[in-house]
Length: 300
Image (tube, rainbow, N blue to C red):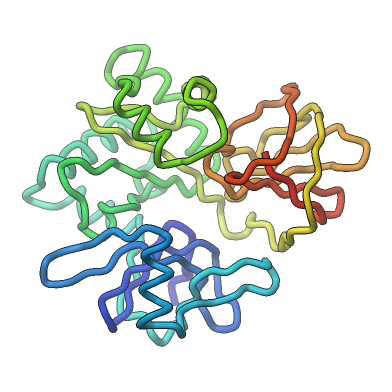
C-alpha cells in the first residue's frame, strides 16, 4: 500500500470531499488531514478553514478529529473511507506526458523542464495544490514539492540562477500582496517580503507565481510529537539551519535552556539562517514550538 504523505490529497465518497494530508502515516487508523475542496457537478469549491470545519460539523462530524499526541484539532479520515489517493509525483508525470495542456499546465511543464535541464531528476518532484486534483484556474499558482533534500536545495540554487538570467522573475507587487494576505502573519508587509526574497523558494514564470517546498524522506521524519505548554519569550542565535525548510521547520539555538525551536507555520520555513539572532515574542497568528526536550510552546 502506498503510504500517505504530507502534500498528498485524499478524496472521500460522500459529498466528494477532498482533504490535504498533513502528516505521514496513520493515527488511530485515520489519515491526519484538513478539508480543502468540495467537488460537485458545478466544479470545485475551495474551502476556508471556517467553511471546512462548519461543513464537517453540520454534515460529516465523524471526520472531525482531536489528535491527543499532537494536542490539536484536525480532520481524520479513516482509510476505508478514501476512494482516491491523489499523489503529487504521479500527477506530475501524468501532466508531463499529457497530449493537450491548458495554460497553467503548460507553464508547469516549462518550469519542470528548466529544473531538469539544470540536472534535477523529475522523478523526485511532484505537483500539489489545485493542479494535483485538476481544480486549477487561469489564476492559480503552481506548487511543487521535492522529495529529496539535496534536490530541493539544488532547486533553490537553480531558481536564484534563473532569476539572475531573467529566465524567471521576482514577484511583482500584486503577487507579493496576494502571498502576504494568504499568510495572515504578524510581520509587516516589508518584513515579510525581505525574508521571502532571500529564500529563493518562490518566483514567477510567465506572470504565474510558483512555490517549491521540501518533503523530507520518510525515514528522516521526526517521530516525536510536540505539545503546547504555554508561552515563552526569548532572544537567541541560530546555530544550525539544516532543517529550516523541513515540515516542521527546525532551528537549533545557543540558548541556555531552549535548545531548539520548531515551526509548523509556513511563514517561518527557511526564515532564519545559521548565525542569525532574533526574538521570539507572542503573536496570535504564528506558532513555534521550542525545547531542549521539546516541551515548550512559543509564538513568534
